Image (tube, rainbow, N blue to C red):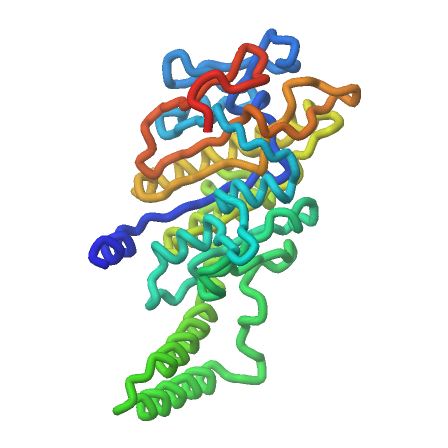
Length: 351
């Protein structure tokens, strides 16, 4: 219990940048220039001697000292749903047991009962792939489920706004009256269910004051310029605001990487955006003294085939692919695992 309490006070946070649909490891973290599977892009050296990543990621090439690349995932499930389940839960559900996803586990371990903010926020505003990358608290129960934000036009907590017909004073007076009656009822009883009921009300009341976390209008212009003008960039700024306010886990999904056709055009558009947003997030967290306590993860449900198909695309590939970790006291500049010269199989450090 003492260790758990210390963990909750440690201010550790996780931001997951979910590359929905499966980004290509060959156009990001594990390029194979010159190989028949390599594609048209070159690699680029990084600030870690001997480590090269795709030329499409020049900003991250200068920030690998804050990063760890994992190049040796062999997850064996090339389906969007099954692959997402495996990466987000770490194991298969059993007939009578539903396992929690990563966000729910972190919310349970790092969330604080007295927190007014949410413990787990999930941005997934694209329609592609949303159904196969669902959040679930599993056996931990609904208390640790995600607040799912799907509406790209109005990114804020659903059904949480105060009605216009209720004034601010009335709203606060009602809360005070409810607290008074609740505490009177609790006297001499000490029932867990009564305390839980009161905590639920306090939590909702707190969530109603969290709207400002979704409003980035007060962010300095240089911060917005650093991240860029895209929806993915804006949601990542919101994720940083949330972990700064004490939210333990935020997932921001960027869809759709499923490039069965025109893989190189797709990645020429999306990888530089990821490069800009991820490097900005690292710099932003570092400037705020938060980088050591915030783990940033990039991954999807699988990678893409080394073989280039007839539509100049890459298909689903779960045999030898990559993910990355940043900040959070990861081993600086580490590269874990290795694939062969064509990127077809893992030859070292299989995960």
